[in-house]
Length: 264
Image (cartoon, rainbow, N blue to C red; front, top):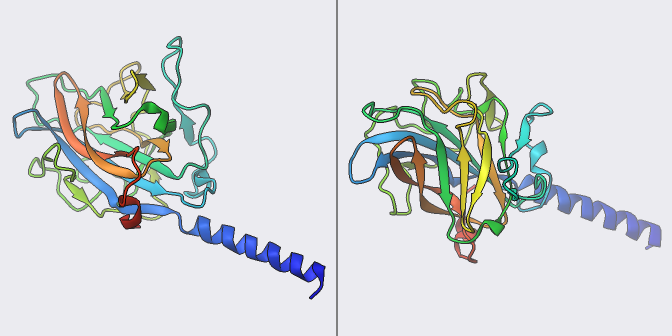
Protein backbone atom coordinates (compact mmCIF):
# COMPACT_ATOMS: atom_id res chain seq x y z
CA UNK A 1 0.00 0.00 0.00
CA UNK A 2 1.40 3.40 -0.95
CA UNK A 3 2.44 5.98 1.58
CA UNK A 4 -0.09 8.37 0.06
CA UNK A 5 -2.94 5.89 0.56
CA UNK A 6 -1.86 5.19 4.13
CA UNK A 7 -1.80 8.93 4.83
CA UNK A 8 -5.27 9.37 3.32
CA UNK A 9 -6.65 6.51 5.40
CA UNK A 10 -5.05 7.92 8.53
CA UNK A 11 -6.58 11.34 7.94
CA UNK A 12 -9.99 9.82 7.30
CA UNK A 13 -9.80 7.78 10.50
CA UNK A 14 -8.76 10.85 12.48
CA UNK A 15 -11.68 12.84 11.06
CA UNK A 16 -14.14 10.06 11.83
CA UNK A 17 -12.73 9.73 15.34
CA UNK A 18 -13.12 13.45 15.97
CA UNK A 19 -16.66 13.43 14.60
CA UNK A 20 -17.55 10.51 16.83
CA UNK A 21 -16.22 12.24 19.92
CA UNK A 22 -18.11 15.45 19.20
CA UNK A 23 -21.23 13.54 18.21
CA UNK A 24 -21.27 11.95 21.67
CA UNK A 25 -21.77 15.34 23.32
CA UNK A 26 -25.18 15.94 24.84
CA UNK A 27 -27.25 16.79 27.91
CA UNK A 28 -27.06 14.30 30.77
CA UNK A 29 -30.53 13.01 31.59
CA UNK A 30 -29.63 12.18 35.19
CA UNK A 31 -28.52 15.78 35.69
CA UNK A 32 -31.28 17.67 33.85
CA UNK A 33 -34.44 18.83 35.61
CA UNK A 34 -35.35 21.17 38.46
CA UNK A 35 -35.21 21.71 42.22
CA UNK A 36 -37.64 23.78 44.26
CA UNK A 37 -35.80 25.66 47.01
CA UNK A 38 -37.32 25.90 50.48
CA UNK A 39 -36.78 27.98 53.59
CA UNK A 40 -34.66 26.33 56.27
CA UNK A 41 -36.84 24.28 58.60
CA UNK A 42 -40.09 25.17 56.83
CA UNK A 43 -41.88 23.52 53.93
CA UNK A 44 -42.30 26.81 52.09
CA UNK A 45 -40.65 27.22 48.71
CA UNK A 46 -39.01 30.39 47.46
CA UNK A 47 -38.09 29.65 43.87
CA UNK A 48 -37.06 27.02 41.35
CA UNK A 49 -33.69 26.40 39.75
CA UNK A 50 -33.87 24.52 36.46
CA UNK A 51 -30.65 22.87 35.33
CA UNK A 52 -29.06 20.79 32.59
CA UNK A 53 -25.48 19.53 32.49
CA UNK A 54 -23.96 19.26 29.02
CA UNK A 55 -21.24 16.62 28.56
CA UNK A 56 -18.64 17.39 25.89
CA UNK A 57 -16.20 14.43 26.11
CA UNK A 58 -14.56 14.99 22.74
CA UNK A 59 -13.35 18.49 23.54
CA UNK A 60 -15.16 20.09 20.59
CA UNK A 61 -16.37 23.69 20.68
CA UNK A 62 -19.62 23.32 22.65
CA UNK A 63 -20.66 26.90 21.82
CA UNK A 64 -21.40 25.71 18.26
CA UNK A 65 -23.75 22.92 19.36
CA UNK A 66 -26.97 24.86 20.01
CA UNK A 67 -27.52 26.99 16.92
CA UNK A 68 -27.47 30.20 18.95
CA UNK A 69 -27.08 33.56 17.18
CA UNK A 70 -23.71 35.27 17.36
CA UNK A 71 -23.32 37.27 20.56
CA UNK A 72 -25.81 35.20 22.58
CA UNK A 73 -23.16 33.49 24.74
CA UNK A 74 -21.68 36.10 27.07
CA UNK A 75 -18.87 35.67 29.58
CA UNK A 76 -19.30 36.79 33.19
CA UNK A 77 -16.60 38.22 35.41
CA UNK A 78 -16.45 39.40 38.97
CA UNK A 79 -17.28 43.05 39.72
CA UNK A 80 -14.74 45.57 38.48
CA UNK A 81 -11.91 46.11 40.94
CA UNK A 82 -12.34 42.79 42.72
CA UNK A 83 -8.91 41.65 41.55
CA UNK A 84 -10.18 38.24 40.49
CA UNK A 85 -12.18 36.72 37.66
CA UNK A 86 -13.85 33.38 37.10
CA UNK A 87 -11.70 31.75 34.45
CA UNK A 88 -9.33 33.30 31.94
CA UNK A 89 -11.61 33.65 28.93
CA UNK A 90 -14.57 31.49 27.92
CA UNK A 91 -13.66 27.79 28.00
CA UNK A 92 -15.22 26.66 24.72
CA UNK A 93 -13.86 23.09 24.90
CA UNK A 94 -14.81 22.29 28.51
CA UNK A 95 -15.85 18.70 29.21
CA UNK A 96 -18.84 19.80 31.32
CA UNK A 97 -21.10 22.84 31.01
CA UNK A 98 -23.46 23.44 33.94
CA UNK A 99 -26.51 25.38 32.75
CA UNK A 100 -28.93 26.94 35.29
CA UNK A 101 -32.08 29.08 35.18
CA UNK A 102 -33.89 30.66 38.17
CA UNK A 103 -37.68 31.09 38.34
CA UNK A 104 -39.15 33.22 41.15
CA UNK A 105 -42.33 31.46 42.29
CA UNK A 106 -42.35 33.52 45.54
CA UNK A 107 -45.20 31.91 47.51
CA UNK A 108 -44.00 33.64 50.69
CA UNK A 109 -44.67 37.36 50.30
CA UNK A 110 -43.97 38.18 53.96
CA UNK A 111 -40.28 38.67 53.21
CA UNK A 112 -38.39 40.27 50.34
CA UNK A 113 -39.89 39.25 47.04
CA UNK A 114 -37.07 39.59 44.53
CA UNK A 115 -34.48 36.85 44.15
CA UNK A 116 -30.98 38.28 44.25
CA UNK A 117 -28.40 35.51 43.98
CA UNK A 118 -27.60 31.83 43.61
CA UNK A 119 -24.60 30.69 45.66
CA UNK A 120 -22.82 27.48 44.69
CA UNK A 121 -20.79 25.90 47.47
CA UNK A 122 -18.25 23.64 45.81
CA UNK A 123 -16.91 20.48 47.47
CA UNK A 124 -13.58 21.44 45.91
CA UNK A 125 -12.07 24.85 45.14
CA UNK A 126 -13.01 27.45 42.55
CA UNK A 127 -9.97 26.34 40.53
CA UNK A 128 -12.34 23.66 39.16
CA UNK A 129 -14.34 26.39 37.41
CA UNK A 130 -12.77 27.34 34.11
CA UNK A 131 -15.25 30.05 33.06
CA UNK A 132 -18.74 31.41 33.63
CA UNK A 133 -21.32 33.17 31.51
CA UNK A 134 -24.94 33.42 30.37
CA UNK A 135 -27.13 33.15 27.28
CA UNK A 136 -28.44 36.63 26.53
CA UNK A 137 -32.29 36.53 26.51
CA UNK A 138 -32.41 32.73 26.18
CA UNK A 139 -34.18 30.24 28.47
CA UNK A 140 -34.50 26.46 28.48
CA UNK A 141 -36.67 24.93 25.77
CA UNK A 142 -39.22 22.58 27.36
CA UNK A 143 -41.44 22.35 24.30
CA UNK A 144 -41.86 26.08 24.91
CA UNK A 145 -40.05 28.73 26.98
CA UNK A 146 -39.26 27.63 30.55
CA UNK A 147 -39.92 30.33 33.12
CA UNK A 148 -43.26 32.03 32.37
CA UNK A 149 -46.27 31.22 34.56
CA UNK A 150 -47.65 27.82 33.64
CA UNK A 151 -44.24 26.44 32.66
CA UNK A 152 -41.90 27.33 35.50
CA UNK A 153 -40.11 23.97 35.45
CA UNK A 154 -37.85 22.10 33.08
CA UNK A 155 -39.82 18.89 33.57
CA UNK A 156 -43.33 17.61 34.12
CA UNK A 157 -44.10 18.84 37.66
CA UNK A 158 -46.68 21.60 37.95
CA UNK A 159 -45.98 25.10 39.27
CA UNK A 160 -46.83 24.33 42.90
CA UNK A 161 -45.04 24.01 46.22
CA UNK A 162 -45.71 20.26 46.34
CA UNK A 163 -42.23 19.39 45.13
CA UNK A 164 -40.00 21.15 47.67
CA UNK A 165 -36.59 19.53 47.51
CA UNK A 166 -35.05 17.95 50.62
CA UNK A 167 -31.63 19.64 50.82
CA UNK A 168 -28.71 17.30 51.38
CA UNK A 169 -30.29 14.07 50.14
CA UNK A 170 -28.31 14.21 46.86
CA UNK A 171 -31.45 14.19 44.72
CA UNK A 172 -33.35 17.08 43.07
CA UNK A 173 -37.08 17.68 42.91
CA UNK A 174 -37.09 16.18 39.41
CA UNK A 175 -34.51 14.75 37.01
CA UNK A 176 -34.63 13.09 33.61
CA UNK A 177 -35.99 16.25 31.95
CA UNK A 178 -33.61 16.90 29.05
CA UNK A 179 -34.22 20.21 27.22
CA UNK A 180 -36.15 20.00 23.95
CA UNK A 181 -34.87 20.78 20.46
CA UNK A 182 -31.48 22.46 20.47
CA UNK A 183 -31.84 23.14 24.20
CA UNK A 184 -32.73 26.83 24.40
CA UNK A 185 -35.28 29.31 23.11
CA UNK A 186 -35.31 33.12 23.01
CA UNK A 187 -37.38 35.11 25.53
CA UNK A 188 -37.00 38.86 25.90
CA UNK A 189 -38.35 39.01 29.48
CA UNK A 190 -35.49 36.99 30.99
CA UNK A 191 -33.35 38.77 33.61
CA UNK A 192 -29.60 38.64 32.99
CA UNK A 193 -27.06 38.04 35.79
CA UNK A 194 -24.74 40.91 36.67
CA UNK A 195 -21.63 38.93 37.50
CA UNK A 196 -20.19 35.66 38.74
CA UNK A 197 -18.51 36.46 42.04
CA UNK A 198 -15.74 34.28 43.44
CA UNK A 199 -16.14 34.26 47.23
CA UNK A 200 -13.19 32.76 49.06
CA UNK A 201 -11.74 29.54 47.72
CA UNK A 202 -14.85 27.40 47.30
CA UNK A 203 -17.92 29.52 46.48
CA UNK A 204 -19.25 31.00 43.24
CA UNK A 205 -22.15 33.48 43.45
CA UNK A 206 -24.30 34.54 40.50
CA UNK A 207 -25.73 37.97 41.30
CA UNK A 208 -28.89 39.69 40.04
CA UNK A 209 -28.66 42.93 42.02
CA UNK A 210 -26.86 45.68 40.10
CA UNK A 211 -29.54 46.18 37.44
CA UNK A 212 -32.74 44.42 38.53
CA UNK A 213 -33.34 41.40 40.81
CA UNK A 214 -35.65 38.62 39.61
CA UNK A 215 -39.21 39.77 40.54
CA UNK A 216 -42.08 37.52 41.65
CA UNK A 217 -43.27 35.63 38.59
CA UNK A 218 -40.04 36.54 36.81
CA UNK A 219 -37.21 34.35 35.62
CA UNK A 220 -33.58 34.58 34.66
CA UNK A 221 -31.87 33.82 31.41
CA UNK A 222 -29.84 30.62 31.35
CA UNK A 223 -26.41 31.07 32.93
CA UNK A 224 -23.55 28.59 33.20
CA UNK A 225 -20.26 27.36 34.59
CA UNK A 226 -17.68 25.29 32.72
CA UNK A 227 -15.53 22.67 34.44
CA UNK A 228 -13.49 19.49 34.05
CA UNK A 229 -15.36 17.99 37.03
CA UNK A 230 -18.18 15.47 36.58
CA UNK A 231 -21.51 16.37 38.27
CA UNK A 232 -22.85 15.46 41.68
CA UNK A 233 -25.93 16.76 43.50
CA UNK A 234 -25.13 19.14 46.34
CA UNK A 235 -27.23 21.56 48.47
CA UNK A 236 -26.94 25.18 47.29
CA UNK A 237 -28.41 28.53 48.32
CA UNK A 238 -30.97 30.83 46.65
CA UNK A 239 -31.42 34.21 48.36
CA UNK A 240 -33.91 37.02 48.53
CA UNK A 241 -33.78 38.16 52.16
CA UNK A 242 -33.90 34.68 53.64
CA UNK A 243 -31.79 31.70 52.66
CA UNK A 244 -33.38 28.77 50.87
CA UNK A 245 -31.69 25.50 49.90
CA UNK A 246 -32.03 22.61 47.48
CA UNK A 247 -29.84 20.08 45.67
CA UNK A 248 -28.65 20.92 42.15
CA UNK A 249 -25.71 19.63 40.06
CA UNK A 250 -22.24 21.08 40.63
CA UNK A 251 -18.74 19.87 39.68
CA UNK A 252 -17.16 17.12 41.78
CA UNK A 253 -13.39 17.42 42.33
CA UNK A 254 -12.87 13.73 43.03
CA UNK A 255 -12.61 10.96 40.43
CA UNK A 256 -15.79 8.93 40.78
CA UNK A 257 -17.69 6.05 39.27
CA UNK A 258 -20.44 8.59 38.59
CA UNK A 259 -18.62 9.44 35.37
CA UNK A 260 -19.21 5.86 34.25
CA UNK A 261 -22.96 5.94 34.89
CA UNK A 262 -24.01 9.34 33.58
CA UNK A 263 -27.17 9.15 31.47
CA UNK A 264 -27.23 11.00 28.16
